[in-house]
Each structure stands twice: as structure tokens, then as C-alpha cells.
Image (cartoon, rainbow, N blue to C red; front, top):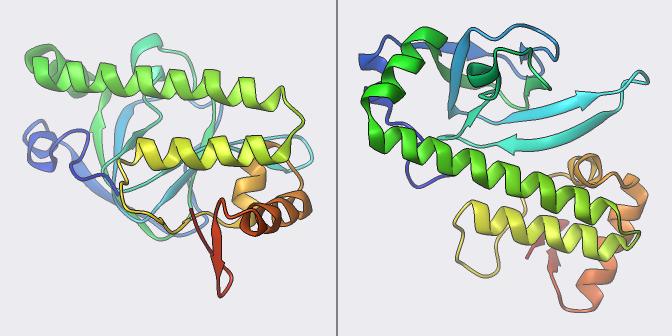
Length: 201
């Protein structure tokens, strides 16, 4: 979880944001739909995914409390590029697009923080594309884990992995069997620890 939200709750509420509950497994929005709101997660977890014609998910990113998602269409007026699904029961704050624009125009600090977030996510996309070009599963998984630890600002060692093996497979383009085998290999090499089925890295 982020130590501080991207935008303080009280600021969003002052610009007219409202709370919304989403049940586990329900979509918040669908790929290809028009965007009308800024979304920030308060409780729960969201997976932001692309789904192919066979129904397989490719996870773009897992959203934790305090983080926002689906922000690109607020700037380019194009449809959502991915689907957001509640991975757990969730509580969101949503702010209408026009109010969001007014907020960032009149709050330089928020605008700068938001720009920094977009740069961080763009850098992650470059990193992901680079890693997917390699066939080494250990490198893909290690890079993904290190990125998540750094992005979340987690300093303790070891840190518990809050992703399932399936989710890690959906993020790296690997088969879940390959992820399981690779995690076991990384454990044997001392690069992470498995305790009662839980992964610490």
C-alpha cells in the first residue's frame, strides 16, 4: 500500500468525488469504453488487464489502495485501453472528468505528482516490453518483483509477495507452471524465500 494516496481523499471530495463500492470479480470499466471519471482506490485491490479472444488475461498492473487507474483517457479522450476488475471487494473514489481537469489546473503540486506517476508507469511499460523480449523466466520474474518493490516504496527485507502465481504469469506472459518452477529455482538459489507456500523476496 502507498504511504500516501496519489491525491488526498479530502481534496477529491472537495471537488465533488463520490464513493463507489465494487464487488469482487465485477468490472469497474471495460476496454474500449468511453471514460468519464478519475478513479482512485480506497480499499481492496484492482487488476488492470487486457483480455484476448480466448479469455486469457494479461495483467498490466495491480492497483493497491491510494493508487489511481484508467487515467490516460482523461487526457487524450480516447477509450480505455484496458479493463479494470475488482480483485477483491473494493471501495473507490470517482471524480468526474471535468472536475478532475479543474482540480489539476488549480493545484500545481497535484499536477506535478500526477505527471510523475504517468512517467513511472511509462517507464514500467518500457521495462516490461524489454523483459518480454527475453526468454529467461528468471530474469522476467526477478525484474518484475524488484520493480514492484521499488514502486511500492517497500524497504523491508524480505517482503511478502501479494501476487498469486497465476497473476505473476499473467503479468510476465509465462505459463503458470513455468512461474511455479522458476520461483522454486530462485528459492534454491537464495534469491527469494518460500515459507508455507508464501513467497518473500
